[in-house]
Length: 297
Length: 213
Ligand SMILES: N[C@@H](CCC(=O)N[C@@H](CS)C(=O)NCC(=O)O)C(=O)O
Ligand SMILES: [Fe+2]
Image (cartoon, rainbow over all chains, first blue to last red; front, side):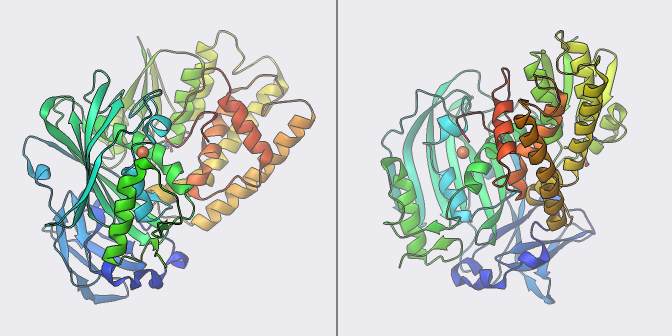
């Protein structure tokens, strides 16, 4: 993968958010690395170089200072790194380690929007019938039913639970429409994980995650990660399904104004379906995140 | 034998073919090529189908064709009983269609290149690509404006759309993804809406039907 930002678009000021600098961020998908090859990517306005050595190990350093090596870990089929010393470990998702699941990195796509806007769109069920028509929703089933929201006191993650939505084609494994149960989890300011009913097993959930690399306050690279119960479809077909959904969201995301997420509760009037969005915005405020948001006054 | 299309859902060139198949109501099967990250189009197996390593590829019985524009010509000639999508009897119209198909090729190295840079990180001079796209859009907008003044709706002279419209439409309608705004091109925007209103029109991710844009 080559840079999604031209040199003129680099903005070091983007990197001044100390909270964001202390987080692990997705840098590049493992499948985009080649042994012995170097690549480069921008994180929070700072250009980083990455290399996969002949033995498969990955190293990351600042492009303007190759002695400044950044910490690296591989998780969710992605190389993660941090601009400072990591303040917290990367969140865990036990389902991603279950051996009977299909683990698929479905794609990496640049989007001209802030990471929090992308996360918030991912949390929103109300747009399904209009944007993902006849796949994740269909008229006249447009109503978002009451659901619950809480911040887990142990992990400090935002959760939306007891969400239900009628879906014509919930997954590649679907053969008919279904009422889908959803649970949403925000374990990281720029990452979101959802758990949804799978057509193949009533007791377990498919896991779909969106991990954003914040490039600039209004620009991200989105990684889609899947841990699915699907023994039948090819990787290509699973990716096709996910890229179709994401490709439908992209113009909606890119037309958001302002591109950064306003955290002042008075700026965008919430409706009931936005309950989790309100919790997410308040949580970002409490964390003190400033990159990709318009902080409350 | 059903027609097969080797296809990638986010490819504008593949969308050209899917769109015409839909407009012509031709039964077909999509063979999804794992373009990214597997680079299946560069695999040895796929190169036996298309040595150029590109999608789309159409297979119709013993006809195996690469290149979106060649496929449009073929599909219209072989599967359009009305003969309207690729009229071959009028020299002027044939010339016009060839001209706009060449224009569509130029969009691939400008508007489409900018989109690939933003979406997939292709390494190229995106500012130059955007400048070139705007220069082409200016030409297209002027042309469509004069067409409207002359009482014409489509890129070429006939009173109905042709494969020229199908060849040009995808990279134009997806241009915002590459950071090429269409705000300054009202005649282009009206033409896009007219294409979307053609019976049998099909969307792709990033392209919405009428009433949702
Ligand atoms: N002239 C061909 C070009 C098609 C083309 O460039 N397809 C792209 C996808 S949109 C492709 O297969 N690229 C492969 C590559 O560049 O590796 C056509 O119009 O079909
Ligand atoms: Fe969506």
